[in-house]
Amino acid sequence: MDLSPAFFLIQQQLSQLFLSPGSGFSLVSLACALFISVLALGFRRFKRNGNIPLKVMMRALFPRRVLTSRSNLVDLGYLGFYVLVYGVLIGWAVLSFQFLSDAIIDLLVAVFGPVKPSSLPERVSRSVITVMLFLAYELGYWINHYLSHRVPFMWEFHKVHHSATVLTPVTSFRVHPGYMLIFSNILAVTAAIGNGFGHYLFGETTAPYALSGTNVVLVLFIYTYVHLQHSHVWIPLRGALGRLIMSPAHHQIHHSSDPIHFNKNLGSCLAVWDWLFGTLYVPGKAREKLSFGVEPDRQEAHTLRGEFFIPFRRAAACLLPKKLLARLWGGARAPAAAEPAPARLAVRRPFEALQQ
View 1 (spheres, one colour):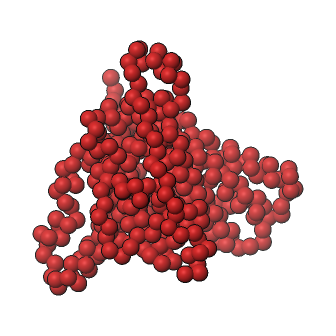
View 2 (tube, helix red, strand yellow; view 1 turned 120 degrees about the vertical axis):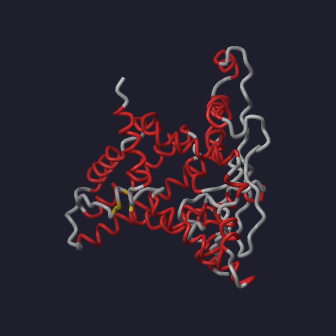
View 3 (cartoon, rainbow, N blue to C red; view 1 turned 90 degrees about the horizontal axis):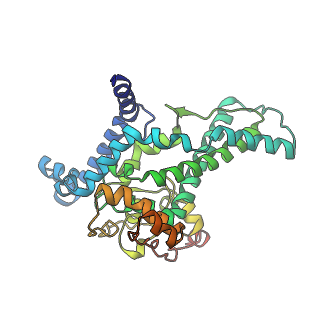
C-alpha cells in the first residue's frame, strides 16, 4: 500500500498550520504571544521586586501543572485530529460561501436594480470590504457562540471546549466536530451576507486584503493577543477599550466555572457585540481567582469517550424521542443531556455605559 499521498497531505496540513503567515496557529504568531507574555509577566514582577530571575519567569510562562494536566493532553489530541482528519470529515458539509454570496447579490440586483461600479480608489473599496467581512465574521462567531450556550443540543457539543480545566493556546483546537460543523455553516451565511452587500454597494467584485487567505484584520488580532485568550496570563482591557476589544482576561472569564461568569463574553476578537446585546462582563485590573471546567470530576472527563463520542449521544437525547433513543442504544440508557449554563443580567447596557 502506497502511503505517500497520506504523508504528503499531513505534511501539507502541518506546513499550512505552523508556517503559513495567515494561519491562526503559525509559529510566528505563537512567538508574538510568547513575547507579549514575557512583557506582561516581567513588568508585573519588576514592579514588585525589581528583578526577574530566569527560572521564575520560565515557571510563570510554562507552569508544570498546566503542561502535565490531562486536560492539556486532550487539547493536543484535538490538535492532532484537526491536522489529520478534520477537513476530510466535515469540509464537504459546509455551505458554499460563494454560492450564498452570489445569491445575495442577485437578490439585491433584482430588488433594487444594478449599481454602477464605484469611482472610489481600489484601496478604499478593498479596505471597506475587508472591514465588513471581519465584522461579519465576528457577528457570525457571536451568534454561534450565543446559541451554543442557549440551545441544549448545541451546548452538548460546545461543552467539550468548556470541559478544559487548564487553558493554553492549544485549547483553541479543543472543539468537537459537531460544533465546528454548525459554526462553519453559520459563518458561511454571515460572511456571505457581508460580502454580498459589500460587492453590491461598490457595483463590482472587490477582493478584501488578506494574508494567506485570512482577513488581515483578523491576522492582526491573532498576532497580538488571540492566543493569550486561552492562557493563564491575565491581560485585561477596561473602560472604552474593554467594551470594544475581547482581551485575554475577557475570554478567561468566559471559561470560568463561577455562575456569575456564565454566558458572558461570547465574542472572538471584539467585545462590541457583547456590549450591544448585553452579554459583556468587563474584567477588573486585579486578576480574578478563576477555576475552569464543566463537571471536571466526572468519570469520562478528558477521555476519548467523554470528549468525542458521548457528546453525540447527549446531543441526540436533546432532539430525539426517548423510545427512538432506546432503540438506537440497543436497550442501554442514553446519558441525560445537561442544561446550558444559567444566564445572568448584563453588567451594564451599552448606552448607559457611554454616560458613565
